[in-house]
Length: 459
Image (cartoon, rainbow, N blue to C red; front, side, top):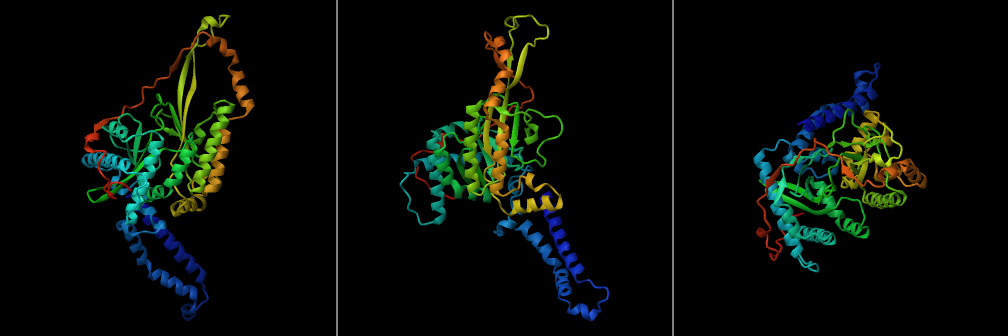
């Protein structure tokens, strides 16, 4: 509703701005009515004023018949934050059906695509060809990462309760029971774009084994109650991590780059909330920065922007053995805590520089008077340059920083010489996920079954 209201306001504001501009251009207090009738600007103003009903029809058409709109610049009214059919107002019954059939269709597609002989490729339908190519591409990726269909079946015997993601996309998502995989909703444009770049994405993932890009393992289309839903299954960056205490979403932008107020452990923080550099060591820092450079160049070449570096920080606590300190000092602390483990990955890698992003940038620059250099809505090339510049500032790679970091803690080393106690800092505010049965087992999908090439199951 809010999105539809915003569309109406923007449309009528633009219409009346154009109408007023034409009237101002044709206005002449000394002109006679006969002279006005021959004035071309005044004629154009009259035509625009008489055509006000076209704006009403335009708004109705975009809101009520988005499936008929195929041009990209009108598509923003449909995709918005989340697919209209899977918004937060879904009732529990529909959520349960969507969860069950998504898992069932996903497992069926994975089993069937893994059973397809790789050289096979002779079908007449263009849509079927695309489906086979895409499933074959992701099957190759799963094989590269040593993932089998039975691994998915075991992980998705149970799943977490569906939720709305906390990011800007507001996507419908859920986790497998072991938190290893994430299934996230997509709009059709994102699914088609992923299908387009899938072969190049596969080549990049294979060529760079230490890539930090999100690992996609499948893209699926489910038809439920006459509605089409698009999903992608990906690896959870924090699957094997202990409790994550801080999460940062780093883009390199500086317009609204931080959150106000106190921060909770499960809140994703922004650029300016990260006040310290990542000190990984000179060699490790350079290797990470070089890999992120390769990843960002790949995204730039595909016309992708608005991606970010997700950083998960695990705080650790070192117990101090005061008996090893030599001179007894009443001011010695009992423990030292701080960042001990980092988990990093590049996320949100399917956003292209489309008309919606162009309009977003125009509105923020010209209407809200934001700094154009600090916006997240930016063309792929300058976005990549700014992103890598932010990473160079964030990741300590110089010898001085590494030596300085070592010197700062050198006087503490005797305290830890005979005390290897290292504990994870615990937090009581982390909610436990709600697990629900999916009623989908590997026995429902025999591996020997021939593929059906059903476009309702996979993209």
